[in-house]
Length: 191
Image (cartoon, rainbow, N blue to C red; front, side):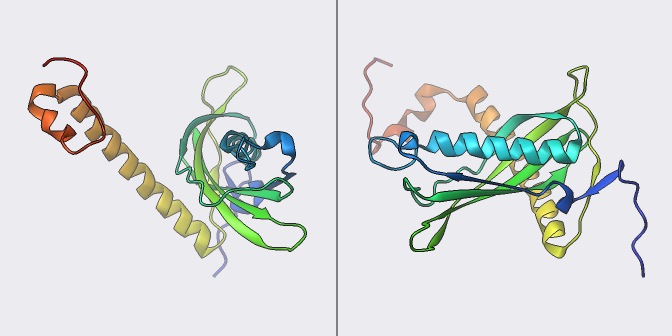
């Protein structure tokens, strides 16, 4: 059975916007410990997320949230860092871009996975208002799995933010002060 023919303006395949950015890590990117600053890596992730999202949307895109930034391994000066991005999910005006970061030692050829992160981007039209994005044509089972994971990630995040907002709103310090017992803190005020 042939899949239905889709209009390119209505749906774009994941492969259409898949983007890889590779950059050499130079000494000016290093912190005092000799490792690459996390902020440098975040900046590169933001660039590749923008390129990927803008290619899919056909519009300027802005970063709304960054989720799951875990620095799994340090990146060294002299390594080539490749950031591989793909659109994992689209809403009406938003896109979730998954990014995998790999560092390669060019002398030894050793490669290590250093980060995976998810950037939510929103497309902007000429009027600077959110613009509708094309749907996503899922080309492989992995594309479908990533889309479903993104839906679940959004649901978990929404629940978590709601719960934390309720905690912040309803927190009574006197009733919850025992939560500080056994922690590495000391009160510098009277209750």
